[in-house]
Length: 298
Image 1 (cartoon, rainbow, N blue to C red):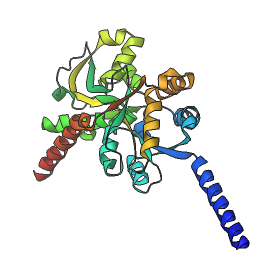
Image 2 (spheres, rainbow, N blue to C red):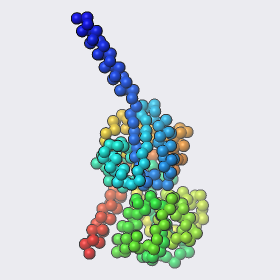
Image 3 (spheres, rainbow, N blue to C red):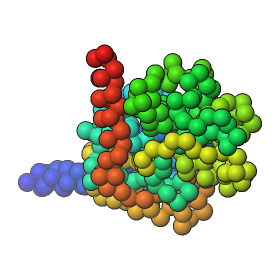
Image 4 (tube, helix red, strand yellow):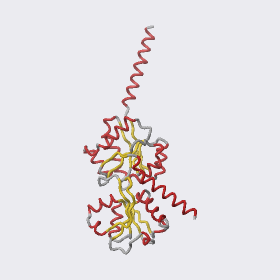
């Protein structure tokens, strides 16, 4: 009887020890992003932002973060599907493509120039003879490489198709892909290209640094306003951990490490938004699909 009781106590203590150990194990947030999500940020900066700075910020919540980068959106989508990552940091297009695996109660968007939405602009020099999109045939366009693969490229393609013009690769003599949008703008400013494509928020940031940009350059076309980018967790992330992550992201500018992370990511902060904010992006996707279907039907 005593031996059985002692065995029971041993099992109880062992079980309690294992449960306590499991409870103390930190939850691992694995954030995936593609070249579209990182955009103008170097992989090293984004890795430092998530693996060091953000990791320190959320350590009190018993959460640790890791960052994984992918060369293509398809690879990020596959990683979300296979539970290789449980969060994403990327474009609204990437969210829409992966939303069946992502939490849909709310999204977190990044602020650029204090704005979480921005228009896409097709820019020319004020002294250019070009007045309309139809006059851009055979011209040279500059665009940041992430933008052309994302909403910027989709908007440009849709605009051309809507006007019964060719696809961008055929319409322009050359698409100059730059590392940053500022380089694309500088190329236009110094007449190395005829036209540039970038977001209004990025143009405003560049114009603040160099006021001549606003005096010498203007938009001949602009899109609806689209979300800059989004951060979201998968549905598998526990509610308490998701809320803790959100709380820390929204308060990120209050700490020195948080402000350093924002500088590395080249954003001003984060904002919670509803899924209906994706309406303009979904409308662009659907319009593009319909125009392409009409093109193939001809």
